[in-house]
Image (cartoon, rainbow, N blue to C red):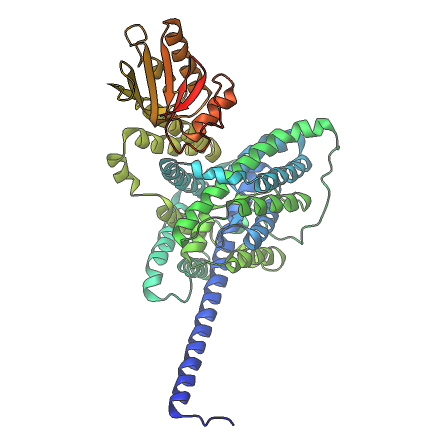
Length: 537
């Protein structure tokens, strides 16, 4: 028998219904935000993709197709929802010589091979090494990339000179463009105070575009870059000879492009992760980037990777899921197929204003304060990576930054090697050297200088309780010290070796140690280097 509905039951059901309705409304609101964020990103992608296509020396549609295909695949399967990928300047500058010397078909073949290399990096989980990038390098990367984005926008202040080149704007055109850029930036800053129904960048682009179109202001528009009208990309195997000679041509470019693409994508992944509070996904992102570039190469695109500027636009417009990146790619395709005439009317000043706000939001302004507080070596790394990013490219800057950071660390670690000398408590007349600090290639020379075989007693004990034997140089250093004591007719013991040190010494084959004597090092271990015998205290 069904129990009658009481007033309490009715109230409970009403609260449940209200909660469900609220959750539904929140879902609809987030859906709207994601779609509008994607539209904003798509608008910002157009001039970037066209400009990078020009840099690489290919047709603008090649850049637009790459932005669509790479953006769609990585949005659906990438390691970090909210990231935006497409054709980038970091890749375009590498492609220039290839296209100039061999033509677009070799570029498409290179992009396919680039994707295969990135897929292999994902399969073998090589992306995890991005964790080794120190924080000063990340700060330098962010600052350098913000400067690069800013400098790239300056090209929009040039106009054709009628002789096949470009010259800087002057007169009324310049002042109108600067005013529209400033107006766009002001609207992006003020719009959230008025309403959050529409992402501020999208609202600013719409208002500035309406003003320019209605008043017919004489300023450059998207149509002045190139026509973006086109059809669907079609599948085609790159028209290149399938020979070893072709592989020799494209492999160096493919490897460099794959490395640059992965580095920029993984650093962007980390940066977006700090904003959205997400972690992981590096290998998944590598696989998605690789698959996207393989597909793009077969469909006539110039390849791509993550775009930090557009990713920041998306995240700060509220895009947090895969829907925003997916919708950005689909909007871009819709622009190419159906709305090219409308998009080409948008003033470039509005898009430049959006990117200038991205620069302001991307640059790590706190790094100026950090420079005064961190060690001078870290401050120099931040400045160095920033400079190399602007002068060369992102991949070179990151590699240089990691190498310099590693050298600084090695130098600091090497300076920590020292020994406390004391009489042995367990063996009368023996002297104990308590080694402190890591023993590796950087500290091997200082380690050898710690000892005095001529004046030491007949029995000397090297206690490694507070040290680690790290590499082959460390083994060689121990051998060198052992030879000195052996030549002096004195007895040397190694004590408190950790399991990894023990494995290194045994693997090297120079110091014969009986692993069965104390395999887990549950007690202290003595190794007599003269007699080759291992015993316990």
